[in-house]
Image 1 (spheres, rainbow, N blue to C red):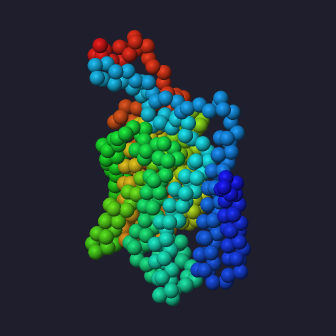
Image 2: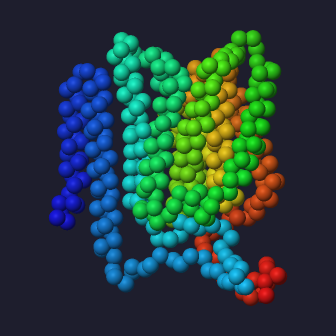
Image 3: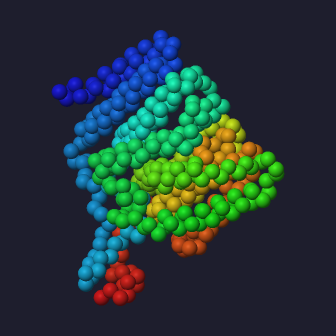
Length: 413
């Protein structure tokens, strides 16, 4: 039975290859895409079993004496019912528990992120296919892949279906993080057992004000015909509901996955905060490489904007020892992008109030650069961050001496 389980990845790899070879012989577009999707699903399952098999073999090949239990939690002392935790930083340090095998991250990425996206995209694919059949738009090639109107789907419905994929991703991740890493979703957010909600609101407030000021400047400096006002209360109310109900899943799971899960993983393996910041920010930027803005305005004008945003979100998360501020920034950024502004190449095709008929990517790059600097300075001023944290090794701090303990807590007897 053990050998049979170990060879499951070979079976799924073979089935995936058979489906892919069969798809080559199909001429019907929608059927070809369906069979290719089935093939990719088999490949993903094959990789999962292969990674699990590799992890088991690697674990079994280790000498018995090298199998150590996970490190203990940060040391604490109790004084008159007062508990003092000696590890001041908790977010990245939470991953120092021996649960960071590479194969686990591969499986979580494939199953929780890509798998969740595939499952959550089923309603979008189904509705698009039905609309293509009923409206006679089979084979239509819209200018933008996100232009659902080309298939007879309204912008609001298309936006809701697009965001729904992240709902499935969120719950898939929440379901798997505990069995794979012995970590809760909240611990992935900040290493604690509670969420600092005020920081989410502060992130929304600061970035929201900066965004509104930027929009006002754009409206005042725009030439005639550059911006189209499309205020329609009948379309705006449903869009607002979509933003309030569904959009938080998209922005939150992206922050949990990148600034939380992956940053903890990279930091735990490298023990270096700078490496964790740079690696995850680049990954976050390249995740958006398929966005229509990149195709329209070019790699070198579009990609730096995503990477800059990733650096801001990553930097505030490391310095603040948690991703709550980043969650707030990300949500209000996408919420305003959906409700207030859109353009022909936008990833979010919505019934936003303002449609920009002319977009200057160079101006946008300069604007996002200035906005990130202002936001960072404001947050640093509010929370009085210690910038030396960036150069400190990711580790569990040893207990202080009694003299150091009394100096930091003079009221403790």
